[in-house]
Image 1 (cartoon, rainbow, N blue to C red):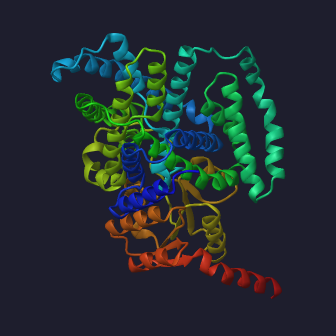
Image 2 (tube, rainbow, N blue to C red; image 1 turned 180 degrees about the vertical axis):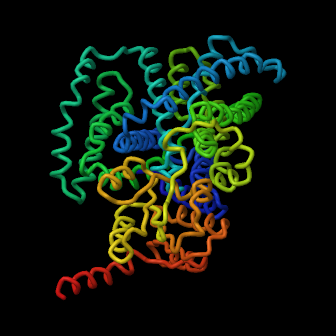
Image 3 (tube, rainbow, N blue to C red; image 1 turned 120 degrees about the vertical axis):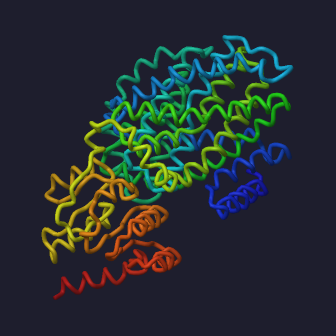
Length: 519
């Protein structure tokens, strides 16, 4: 059984960091280093739970993945160009370290290139966690970042396959027939219903696919990702994703704890880790420049680049295999682990305050944009709408339907998922693609002409961020916001919003609907 004291420590330190205004994952990292130093808990068991978390993470990413997004140049080309720039640059720095740190042995070129490749990836776990906490999973910058991360993961898996002592099994060729399994898997998912059977189905597919790929001498996470893609865009794939998301978050806690169990390197190598962590400041600048070249707005480029502002768990996997093969001294593995932890500590404050940071830099950054932007990045016209609904999910769609009966032609929906926005348009609704947390979008929306704004986003923190933006832009109309718990409703009411508590008022709406049918 996992050490109860370790679980309690992770909770308390995570809670402390949350009260400090930073994501609790930093608390899990600190807990891991403390537990590793105290030899608290079973490191092997923690690593197994961490691997389960990564498998579930990649499976859920697959459930939400649209393969057409990976084919976009701003995804695969940016990922490739970034690698082509960062790997040689990092290798040169590593080969010059002995000139900076007295007494440090010179890093051989072959070793430097291996380390540089391991350091070229960004953390998928971190990016997904940050987007989830900010409620931005469907935003354009999140999709581009996840796409880049998946391309990087494919590079890492290719490296692991080509350098493995065990080449892929000849039976791996049979995997080209996996698309034939989709109808069977979708049928089973539909038969599972809505309860625990659906969760059990998700676990069995994620773990089964990981085991299958390991049996074929391929990476377990790659199998989970591919099987997630097989189930994507099905009727119940979104429901399965929502059912698995909390399990994924719990097991990913073990991943952040596991980083600390690699231990601390020698004092000299700690200095190397600090220098490598400082080198990470170049990464968002490189991403920012590349994404601007591919006709993205400054805001999208900045949010994407900063979400990739860290080193990756895959780098540790690549380094661990190099140690096992005798190509890398063991002290470099702990050095990379500390560099990764430091990079996460650096990245969190920037990502936590990203929107206020962009607001201060926007005038200067926007001057760097190209004149011709991508279609999804161009401004939209809200027309003469008096009511604007931010978030066209089930709640937003219901609000749109109700208001259309009373104020026909005066409502417009804003949806951050371009496919969903296009679907609503095809069904006859007035819906535009846009991000409610995007200050640029709100500034162009001529809000002074709108009578009421209804905010029905999936995440309370994102709702709060949107309200603050609207108030900063001196919007004088009514703001109505969805909440789910009394403390959330109280916070929104204190900001002057009209609130609707979904859970508290669901019974009222249910009874009202029943009485309408009787009447």
